[in-house]
Image (cartoon, rainbow, N blue to C red; front, side):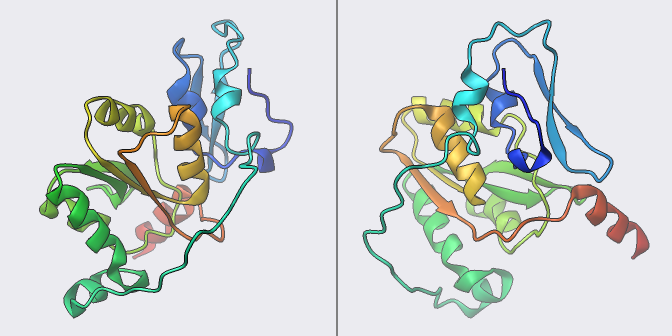
Length: 200
């Protein structure tokens, strides 16, 4: 069973909650609005899967860089709507054109950041630009696994802890999975973002 002695030992990626087949882990917000695992120990069977998927416990041992490429989208309209030169839109459009799906962060109708699936270019538009807030990943790792098992290509975009959590969650490499790590310097809580929106 995963145990937190300090909040700095958790990034809130929610992979532990997604992997638990017994429903003993639920992500709950603290007083600042950041989510952490809340564990019902009476349901736990000590299978260890929650610890196995945790990107904080299981830090990658290798970080080899094969090649570095600088790129930007030539479409000025897309660049204006995007971050980092609009490259994500190019990668995502290729994945969708090849029959795949794109998983990324969007703001829902309540202006809450959440990870979702886009299977066409219209759905993709909500994933463009930075969100600067912790996103809800509830159920998204299972959804990615389902698409991969169906043989679909998946392009997953997230902050490094989410990408690492997904790779741990899947256990083995999948040739149809492509990931994009978004640079992260830490994120504000959804509560802070909600308070900001309420003052507008």
